[in-house]
Amino acid sequence: MFLRIPQLSRIPARPRVAQAKPKLPAIPSLSTSAPATAYSRHFSHLSRTSPAAEIANKLEKDGCVVIESMLTPSQISGLNRDLDAALANVPAGRPANANTAPLPEGADGAVFGHNTKRLGDLLNASGTFREEVIDNDSLHDVSSEIFEETGDYWLSTAQMIQIGPGSKAQPLHPDASGWWPFWSMGDKWTPEFAVNFLIATTDTTKMNGATGVVRGSNKIKYSEVMDDTTFGFWRFSDEEVEQIELKAGDCLLLGGRIVHRGEANKTADEFRRILSCTVISSTLTPEEAHPLLLNEDMVKKVSERAKKFLGFRELATTIGPDVWQDHRQGGLMRRLGF
Image (cartoon, rainbow, N blue to C red; front, side, top):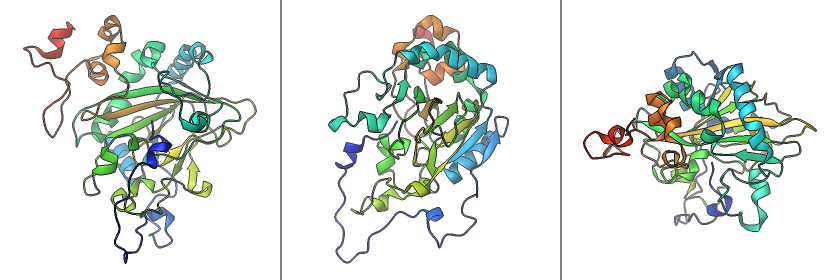
């Protein structure tokens, strides 16, 4: 999930005082004057059994963190088996949403990858995803910690992304840029409101397209760069992009502000698969309308926390009214009958 490139040209820069010097984004890791201890030499790798608070702290500091072996080998096998047939029928170079209109000037291939396939509606496509992944302890424990400042959380969208041989690198982007708070919330209070659990279902390597991130880009002060007409909106050099390799089952958890991309697949015959699971604050609306897409018999079988995760229960917020409510006695549970 990321902001479409043509939209960037429509974001107006505010008038600037003629005598003022341009304000550039402060990214400590890209500055020679930054203290050497500002960032770790390597991005953190933690276990699925690590305390959720520790994982959330690393995410806040660096903008991303690896959760090793988040899914078991049997779960990875189940996901790949479930999705092999579905992916075979998906055209390359298109978004997961089949209703999306083509981008202007034939940009679909460049943005989505000429030999990259994206499969949505995973809750219906994969029993493993529906019955096991959305009820994963690490996913929920970490999400509870991350979104504590704003309230509950729920699933926005999930996609299987398969980067095939010859695919070029994506445009760099931060995932949260598709929601308005990214551009307007300021810099004093910046809670996470959208994160992406990128779970490898094949080994990802520097050769087959392991995700690349720009260290320190989660600290860009957009209230300043929006005043700067020279700011290049995530046009970092290739040297500033660090690839993070994963073993199948590992998860690269991305904060909403970290600039990243799926890298080029330089192999002749390897297909890199990543399960992208975007989780958002209860204060935002999900991309996929899960309560309208799932058979009730399927939903009855999942846990209470999974029901809430998918929008079959009310959600709480820390500011303002709770959301997704049935104001009648008994609420959604009584209305749904389960």
